[in-house]
Length: 188
Image (tube, rainbow, N blue to C red; front, side, top):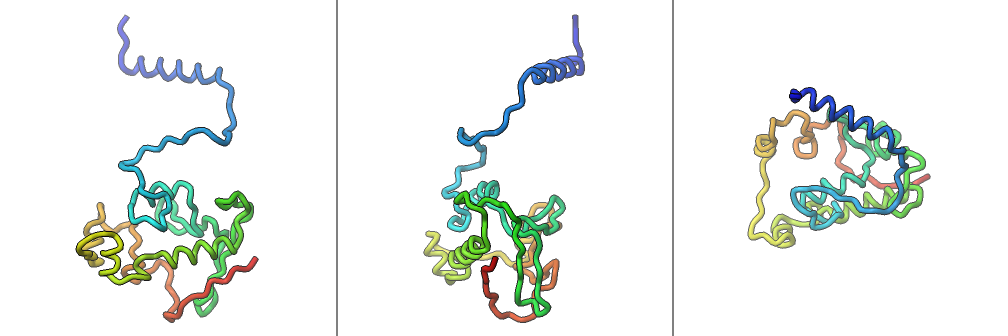
């Protein structure tokens, strides 16, 4: 008896579905191993402390942000349930989702978010070091930056869907007109 490729696939799918019917559903449990395939191992799993893209890519699987992007690149609330911006644009009030576990197992608080933002601001290399200092810190002889045009030209498929607001000043929503620093205030 000769079978076509379609018949073999159909029989294989039917056999697989039948086999699965006999397996009881199991709830996930803590423990065990997680095996992840990446192009390289991350040097660190702390995206704040590493310049390696793979560190960022891996950590995005367990680190959440106040806001995220949906499949179309639109900003959507993530850890923030909503955000209110004062009329002068100087105060952003984030209402946090309730019941979210922080990395220590306790419910996330405004103090946790504030501490995370302050840690990021303190460790942000470009905010705290000159170009020569950054080059020395990352162990290179010289360091150069692409222009906005060069960066957009380097993005595969062009700049569509790529947010360049931090570089160009073209924000999806207008930033406040003043350049004053913002104050992080934790309140719950």
